[in-house]
Image (cartoon, rainbow, N blue to C red; front, side, top):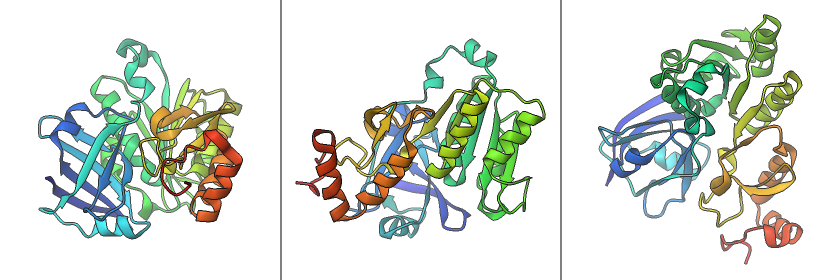
Length: 292
């Protein structure tokens, strides 16, 4: 049983849960994701790992209620349990494969938007525990939507906040914040951006202009999480990739965000899925049953 031992409301409709899943916790690495089901009738929900505790056998998830199944998840309380917690899935962050001494020489910047802060935290914590200090820009529309503030501060050299309405930190989005830091003389040679696709798109446009190699996580477009449904098909450098099996992290300069956003909208309807199958042919990956 995947029992819930902690539940916390982080912000409007955003929840954190610690779940007993010792086999998953033993193998999880930053950048990977899980698939959870609230109950036997629930849909599969892919969520990037926010944290893990190998000794206690716990994994931490953060999710926002956006539909029936996430609303059902939000109604679970401490002592309840998930029907399934599967993982870890996907590839770990490229950073964990680099020698620690090499990482220490890099000037690394993370940019976190909304609930994308959760997977960013996991990577920041791993780097911090290995003696690698990094900077981070955390953005949201308004102060009340910023999450995990204290936790993020504990694992960064410098944490900058950016709010669209100016209610906290730098007045503007994460791109405004990055440009401001750059104008002040801050320089970085690696960037990781995780958040809404539109935010990642414009952040990558700016980092390319500034010459900062950038990695993004495409976890937001995953549905099945195993390469069967084709929901997370995207173009990276003109090549067909699937976020769940090839990612979820990719070179942000090469991701076709416009195609990914349009495709995500089409995939939500039966007519759209049929159109995509017709357009994409053998690369559609139609094992979900919707397209047969």
